[in-house]
Length: 76
Image (cartoon, rainbow, N blue to C red; front, side, top):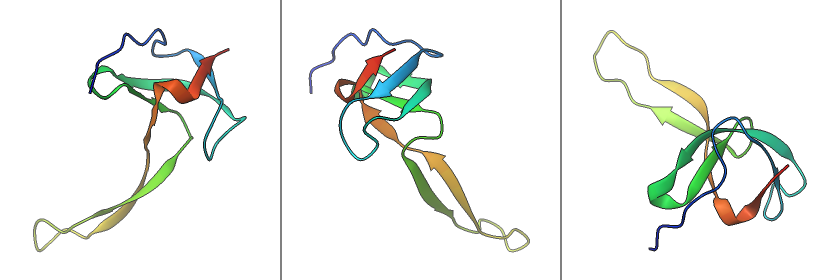
């Protein structure tokens, strides 16, 4: 996969121009240059199940933001 220079920086406000979340806006939380993706706050929420690692702990379910390809966003 080719690496492209992503012009968006952490903290920028962006609008999603295609996909499931089209039309929504959010703030960039993290930029993943190696994968050409960005993580946007409160967009593309995914459920992650965390296994028990020790007998005293409990398993849990976490809500995390998933990455979105940089070509699907536009800087506002």
